[in-house]
Image (cartoon, rainbow, N blue to C red):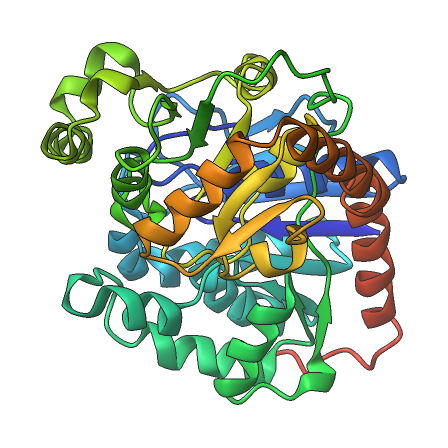
Length: 398
């Protein structure tokens, strides 16, 4: 297949860890790489965010990244990109008309809106992966939700009109059906993990070493993790993610988290690494006894898979994709979100039981390799996309 993959803000070549660069960037890169390895031709269309970005560049996985001019060629916050989507979509249609693509696969709601319009103009089928939902964000962030007005209604329309919705977990399917999606329209294909990069390493003697990995945004629950740390004597916490180390002091969330740790009396047991290059991340994970993943909500969450692939148990919150990936009592433990007491109890009990630490870590590594490799994900996505090619092409919209 000749596949047009659309990821308007999440460039797969971007450095992961900034506010708007995270799991979606990793997902698009790995999926495109996996589909190329299976013999398909993949072009990822993303918005040009730098005047110096070449129009087309070949990524390390063999796919092409096409930087589409839509709005200023500068870094624009994700939530401010909505007004540039008509231009983005029009350019996609022009490029696809000349490029002879068989199918399009959109990632994120704005990409979905642009892809639907372009695919209808060209007459090719299209699939939708949301990665995050406005309805969930609104529920948890209320008035602090910075999404453009109308996002939820746009997502509702995408649910009803996509040729296929690829959801990443069971919880997402539940949310989508509440938006009005017919269950028959969806297929569950999880995110994956690079098990050649994230490999199981025998753990050192337990030392109460906790690790949290992720962007420094409030919904990731790092404040709750710090409050839990205060209730776990002798444990230490390393936080990997956010700006580069030299820029950390300028970051408002970093300062907020330090204030929480100071107020809880555990600042001396916390270490902020800042942004960590992906080639260093397996070593950072391997140095921990337990990886803590405590978001308020999480569409899927790749960090638990990376921890499991490295043979480290996960203590997380029972939300989103963690409900599928982490098996309580086998690969880790799950607690309610925003509950530092429950999080502390789970961490304290696990750190006090070295045999359980080893058992959970080994089981997690087996689970990651048997269910969540990017090879599995690419193969399932290939099957899902190929199923659309047999459908009658959509009527071309002038």
